Amino acid sequence: MHYIVIGNGVAGATAALNIRKTDAEGDITVLTDESRPFYSRIRLIRYLAGEVDEKKLVIYKGDWYERNRIDLLLESPVDSIDTESREVVITSGRTMKYDRLLLATGAVSFVPPVPGSRKKGVFTLRTLKDAAAIRDYAVNAGRVVLIGGGVLGLEAGNSLRKTGHPVSVVEFSPRLLPRQMDAEGAVILRKQMEDMGFTFYLGAKSKEITGGDKVEGLLLEDGREIRCDMIIISAGIRPNAGLAEKLGLKINKGLSVNDGMETAIPGIYAAGDLIEHRGSFYGIWPASEKQGETAGINMAGGDAVYNGTVPSNILKIAGIDLCAAGDIDPEGRFESIVSKDEEKYIYRKLVISGNNITGCILYGDISGRKRIIRAIDEKRDIGGIKTELSRWNTEVL
Amino acid sequence: MDKYECSVCGYIYDPEIGDPEGGAAAGTPFEKLPDEWVCPVCGASKDQFEKAG
Ligand SMILES: Cc1cc2nc3c(=O)[nH]c(=O)nc-3n(C[C@H](O)[C@H](O)[C@H](O)COP(=O)(O)OP(=O)(O)OC[C@H]3O[C@@H](n4cnc5c(N)ncnc54)[C@H](O)[C@@H]3O)c2cc1C
Ligand SMILES: [Zn+2]
Image 1 (cartoon, chains in turn purple, brown):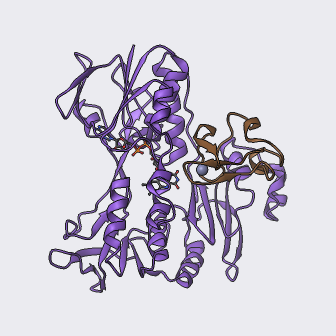
Image 2 (cartoon, each protein chain N blue to C red):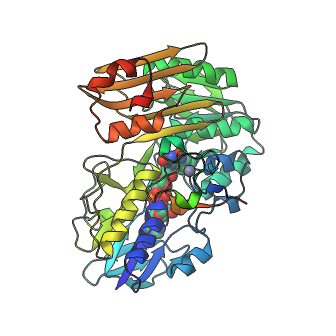
Image 3 (spheres, rainbow over the protein chains, first blue to last red):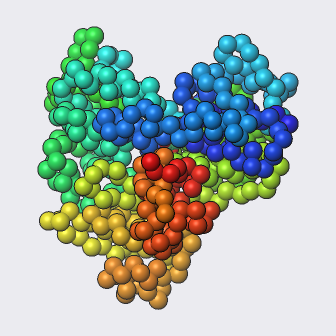
């Protein structure tokens, strides 16, 4: 049996490990277009701030692949897949036969159609190569603008703020962290981050990146221009679905798979940021890892089921505790329990639908986070403990 | 008892503190954490931890 895994992020590496745990004999090949073994994208934020070096980013080193008898081929982008002959074609022209194949090609940064985005000094952040390029360019740059005020934008902005750059964040939505915060909480967060030195342009649409060869500023639709030396676009991600599309597979928010991580083509599985499962596109590490595990077990003949993940994000900025999970109900359509202290930068909200907690925003005080997320996941009946919860006693969960 | 570091996010598991919210009482050595235990910060699995040096 020959297993081929395309992509060596958390989904691909975890799948390879689980194939090996399930099938001690089969041949496993992992193909990646990158030049490093499996590393942490999450830690690229710390790398940007100069707090960890490249070596520290690597999660599974070369000897891990040897120990698990996994062939890792670096710098080997897959160009196409022939399902008739069951062959993978690498860009170099080399072909390889597979019996089971995993698509774990992840996601790519979305670049909105803003004129000027090809100028020198405009970046996105997804890979180590991207992060290294940002670090290099930042050495000779002053002001930095982030296009996109989501988790990635704020975290990357914070890293550059720490290395001495004045940082502005331009967000299309009228509030920061539109997917993790409601309007009331976002106002407090904005204040806290302004105190740290950030400048914000909210409800602002980017019109054009100005300058000659190099970036000199960002022009907004409302006519304002922000002068800067560097722009990082953090406007979300899209599934890296080129290969899947070539196979004629259908892409919605991501590539659709069933609970066993199978695509519509027999023998071809998919996992990670590439996929959509039961209508959800996650784009987060723990979901990708679980999907990789499920795919790996099933490729090797096991019988694993992926039941979905409660989407949750933690903002990793020192001095700010912020976590959001599930449905944060920014429109306030559901019942909720809210506790707020603007002075202390605290805003907490539990979203309640019937007798279930369906989501939460925990800002300034994330105690009880795990209990709350577990209660969301298990659809715990909280009918009898609402009074306790309204006093923020989360011990009862 | 050894401390372990999450290689995904840098979180350190200190057995003396444990992870009470995650079901690990203070004093639980890393090796004794259940297989389903995940990093309280980033959600990575036990496989992605290594001994903190
Ligand atoms: C800076 C940053 C911070 C983040 N922080 C968090 C966080 O705090 N919490 C969280 O949950 N998530 C976070 N994420 C998201 C998380 O990293 C992703 O959800 C996760 O990496 C997805 O894993 P994956 O294996 O599906 O895809 P990826 O990690 O994207 O891996 C896919 C791999 O496939 C390779 N590939 C693609 N096409 C081909 C091809 N044709 N041939 C060969 N190889 C190919 C790619 O180069 C890549 O190496 C962050 C992401 C970034 C960039
Ligand atoms: Zn972690």
